[in-house]
Image (cartoon, rainbow, N blue to C red; front, top):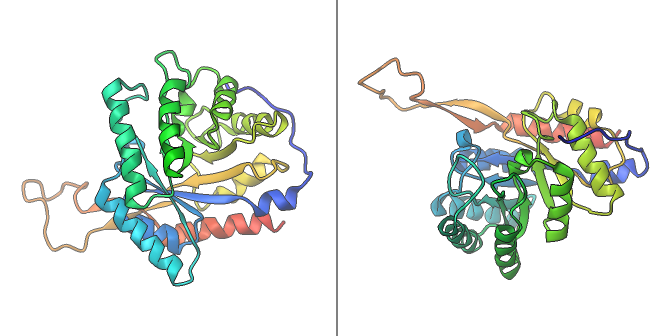
Length: 283
C-alpha cells in the first residue's frame, strides 16, 4: 500500500529537528486551553473526535480563537488554529450539497477566527477528489487560510499518487498514519512519504498522527530517523479522562459509566509531548 523506503540521511538533522511542529487535535474549549498552555504549536479544532473529528460549532471556534488571540496579545506563544471541515462521519465522498456546505463552513471558519482549515475528499474509487479539493482550495486562497489534508489520505488506494496529487494541487500538508491503524504500524509508509516529498521536490509536509501520545512521541520520532528537511510534524490528542464535579447523576441508570466522564487533552500530557520533541531536537 504505502511501500518501503530507503534509509533516511542525517544531513541537515539539526535544522530539521528544530523546525518540527506539534499539533494537538481537540474538540472542547478545555482541551484547546490545555493544548495552548502545554506548549503546542498548532491546534486542530473539531467536534466529535470519537467520530474522527467533524466540523466544530461556530461558538466553540470563536471562543477558542478569542482565547488564543488573548494569549498572544499578552506576550505568550502564538498558537495556530486550524478548523476541521467535515460535514459527517462515514466516508469522505461528498455530493454537491455537502460540498456547498463545506464551502460555507470554510467561510465561517475564516469569519470565526481560524488560521486555516482541515479537509479531505476522495472519489468513490479511492483517489483524491481533485474537483472538490480545488473548489475548497480556491475558497481558502481567497480567504488567506492555511490547509491540511486530513486522514482521508489513509484510505486512498495509491499513497504515492495521492501525495503527488496533493502537491500538484498546492496542498501544503497531509495528516497520515501511514495507511495503518496507527503511526507506529505505519512507520514505513510515513517514511516513504517523507522520502518522496523531499526527494521528489514535492515539499508536502507530512504530519504523523494516530496512536502518538506523551509517553511514546520521542520514541516515534527517533525511530523515524533524520534528514527530512523540515517536512515532519507530529499530531495527537494527548488525552486524559475528565470526571465531572457536578452533584447529579443519570437517574434512569445511576451506574451508567459514560455519564460524568469524557476525554480531554491533558495539560501535563501536552507539556510532556512538547518537552519530548524539544529534547529530541536538541540531540
